[in-house]
Length: 619
Image 1: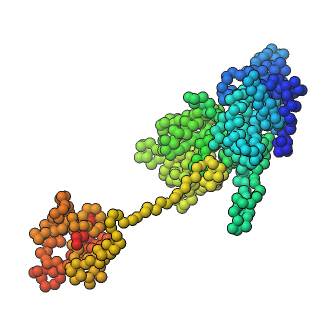
Image 2: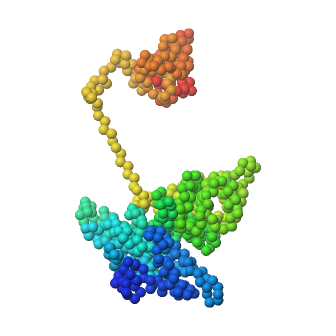
Image 3: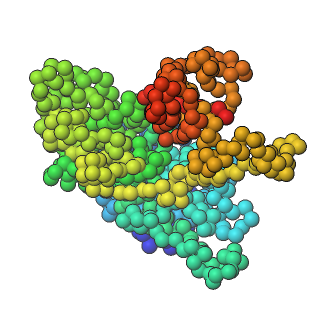
């Protein structure tokens, strides 16, 4: 509680807000503080008559569904965008339909409470929430804390306890933004509906850089097992509280970094992890600067599996709300149809974006949409749709200008694979079409070579989340390689002595040719023939030439001979072959022959061109 109070959350005990107390709850089965909520409404909406504020508060507190996730989405929209369900006629006879604000973007206009040990009851069960955080009387955080060292303590136990609370008191979580679990050492945050494996620590500083961690191996003397020594531990709650519950950052998380998806099975809720929060925040600022300068917004270098799709979704939402950009047009560009479809479906399910995305399927549609669009819009397309028509290529024309507006933002996914052909390729065409646009890249592997330099094309690296951090955070599963050595042994009755006897057993012919063998790696009796499988020594079932000069197979072979013309050419000189041929894997074979009609020796050199496939050796 001291940590929360240090960051501006006023500490209170559960009994201070119990039913019947001033500014407390109305009943034991509801944890909303209606008196404080109404006071905040009057402060934030001074022009709206009090009776309509009471009506608005009553309407949002009345459940429209028994599904806690659907109710959570409904309340999230109201807390972020305001409530427009009240209409009345003012004293001048003018009908009013105000947007009633429950939470202000300005920190100083809100009341922040941290309440310890909040008891909640139903007819069947009674539970006690360890910590409940309130903003303007509405519960926005529920924390389950286990005592360090307890037998049942653990992150999994705390998560299971929250799941029990959600099942027994689903309406208590209607306005909850996030939940926190801790076992006294480790601390994680997520949403009330997040699986345990997607809960995340907050392990970065205020600049988004990883916090240093002490390695126990560096804190003990050599030769001593760290497990045998008492060492200080890092209590992650001390990092999570200042990271998330800084009041301004918490309001940012609630407003811009919580996303809902709608699918066939209902809603799904997600909240940004630390690396996603800082990457998007930096990218938005860099984009605003780029549109006022050279158009290079930069590179978000995040490894695979770190959630780049969600980062692009959060970025699209946040950058669209920037007043300086005047409702920009976003063009999401990929280089593969499958990736384009995948990203489009993710954006299309999202309830965070102000408008539905448009999937561009043809080059004509792309040109029409970007030419006629004046403001806003989210388009998905592939880079190849910025190609030229046949007539434009024949005439040697550049890509036509589609718009020269400056509030165009091109979001490039997997940017390292393309966008380098800036002379006469797609990268040149997209810049001819959108000359004043800002380009931002998301990739897991930026390149830096003479021909392909991702930073040269898109600008400096905005934020980095590498594989080491991803594995440490549990965002990416580590892959381990362990070589397997296959055991080799002698089969059957074969022995080392038997192999030695076989090696030392030499025939008379091989003894006479020992001198030649010492000079060449191949036996002098080797006869070279062609074979279609590559350079190799062939066993006795190989192609050879008979006395007639024609190629033939040995008795054990049942296949026809190939490339006989090459062998035929060797024998056609009607020579008596001097058996000192040399065959090897170098691609050249020399056969020395002594012509019967001449006194001189004629050398015939055969290469791969003359023997088109391979040589095989027959002893």
